[in-house]
Length: 402
Image 1 (spheres, rainbow, N blue to C red):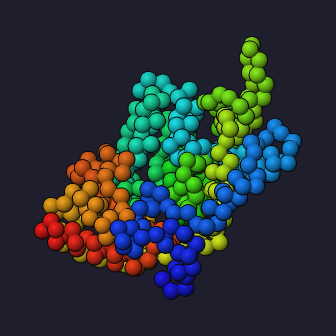
Image 2: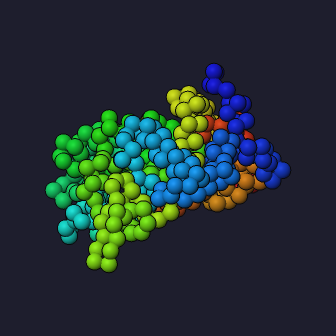
Image 3: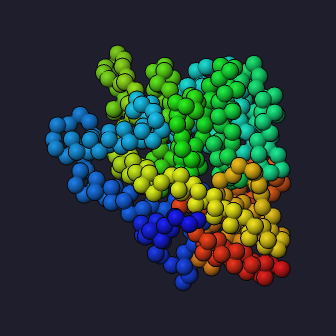
């Protein structure tokens, strides 16, 4: 990890100076949400302190400031994905973005028996919306390492497959899926593809035009930004053809009791007062990642994962769940004689924050025959000391549960 200034990175995150149960905080719950750097906090606070006003449809100065910051954030987010600004639809996060595609893009195209092809490692938010839209969800299996069995995935593409939706990086296992290969095979068959990038954008570059997917969805809070904000990146021709799914202010062009007309994209899908601070905070978070260097962060996290994996695996009675060859910074595990919730409680007493449960991937837990796992997940500000604190706490679990 030489050349990576971990101390400088950590200094930018105020919450890391907190103590937990009288212990140094080792925050390893980043797959659930990341902490926020000072620059993001300042950007959001600055908006509320000096530019707070509703955007669009006003000529007073505060509204002009707010609109400039808000639309500037859209431009910034579009540059991150190498997309056009018209292809960026603001949402409350990944879940809402998937629901938007399910209701506005897929549902009007469905006939009884039509299918959405998924993988066995999908988050609930990439399963349930398709079912609510009326599709039959079909999942390709994962192997014992937690990798997609690509040949079996190919076999499940059929004449009733109307959409393929795949997680870029598994939130439970850390598996990085071969999304480029998936998109290539789907395009060859004329099937649209959605990629769930919630766990990817803070760790991997995403070039939306080069990837060739039809939709890419993400959340700000897993990339050092605010909660409750995210976006749908979509090919403009799809957005032009899709009907709006929410009605109200900003998504309309004209309104009359006899009928209404819709705004241009992306505003057609953004009804109501938007989350201005969320957009500003997300843009600031992407600025922070860029300033720290996405490649440098990825290399640091990979090195830390290589440091952590054998040390965690060596804990007596511990079994890693998810050992894919191409994997992000997630360590999901179970321990003999200890329920994941008990593991999490003991680790908390030692200042270590992890996530326990099914991680909104109940079908995946069933695949591995476990009710839940304990999950430690890495971010830019984690270091070997966090891993060492985790491992020491796990040895305490062994002592307590035998």
